[in-house]
Length: 111
Length: 116
Image 1 (cartoon, rainbow over the protein chains, first blue to last red):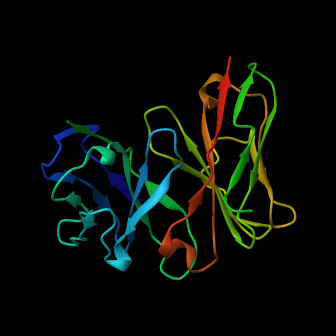
Image 2: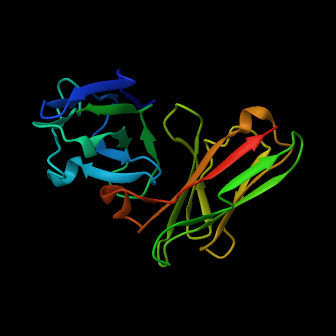
């Protein structure tokens, strides 16, 4: 069965320092991978998706099939990055299907 | 509507009571998902509809949980004989069919269910 692992429950980083939120997955096929973010008192929202290879709010994530990882990175943390981050996987290629979420990592940016 | 709307926002139920949670997806979104998020955990998949068809209900934890979407728009998640372990935030999400999984889903604010 597919699984998403986020090994850190909490990550504290000083403002201006680099950020890396780890995500590993287990899936035998070719997954679609996402990062979702939930800011305080806001709803869960999509941050970025692997397929588009985009950078959102300075964040990037590269799919490493050899290491089955999809780590989220940002070179310089900002205070407004403090939030809950969820890595997620969809197994489907051609149709809507469920997304499997990791347990999440709380990112705390220190002033 | 402009976003995914869920009601009620909060629900307190006595153990053994039946509850019904409502989700109003984005107009035109054919796919609808229900997730359960326990405290400190990530969202766990419950069930998925494409229009009125329930294509996957593998995540429903027991036969006390039932979901429907009779006209392919509004969906209701019903929990019968609630138990304390049902306490969680129930999230609804919708997406455009076929392309939705590639672009992610739009989530509602959730219903926080507390069973006492």
